[in-house]
Image (cartoon, rainbow, N blue to C red; front, side, top):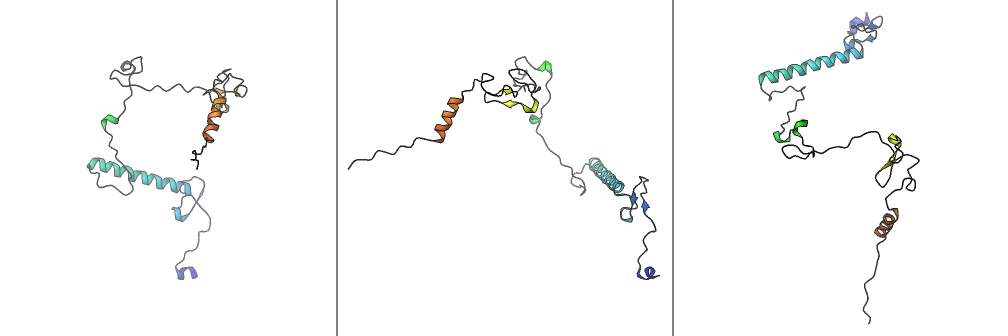
Length: 173
């Protein structure tokens, strides 16, 4: 009787199952649904509101009256910026099109292979300073006849790091 006088209601006798019969327990805060079903219901309601608002904007032809839930952005792209796929008949064999545009051909990205033994190296390949990829066996410069000149590169690095300092000549008194 004390609950009736204060306006509080007694808690339900047992747990309430979700009204969607998913097997989980619901609560009164989520309209007797489990949290997953409640989130799904809210998402469906929001999507229908967005669809109705965007459909209303399209039919009405007015983009100034946007709903606060809609996040529609229009992007104006100039016609000269639009890139259309080229058809093989429009391309010449030299990599240019009939209109004179030069097409950039990207080299085929196949599996990484050792330049010497052609073994597949994948992510474990070693990049050499000569620009090639090698396996663990051929990663050293003496194992793959590397054309890169390490000696002159080291001399240039030392010369750049240690510039020659000369004092100006002093006039004798």
